[in-house]
Length: 129
Image (tube, rainbow, N blue to C red; front, side, top):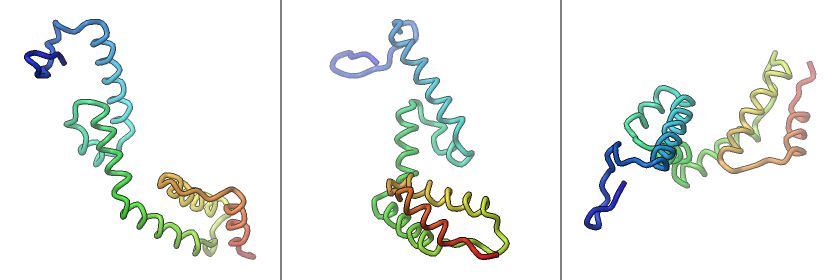
């Protein structure tokens, strides 16, 4: 961008200096990394955006949601955590995968359970088969 008569206008490619080219390259790399990590539905939400910053902010809003949505998700996960137990005919490995998935959701929402609480929960929920 450049300023003409106190207004921001886009530079033509011929007007780009080395710093502009470097920044454009970094933006393109960031866009590539972000879009390669997305599912198809998410990709279509951001495919028309032009900067990595716009993509990041859009994804951040979509995944974090509002404070109420976040608290609702935490409440649902907390109930799931309290009721967590080993399923009939479930291996310990499968149970651990389900538990890790649950803990990862908590972490993504900013709520953490310490390691001792996690171990206590797992050991207390094993079946005697």
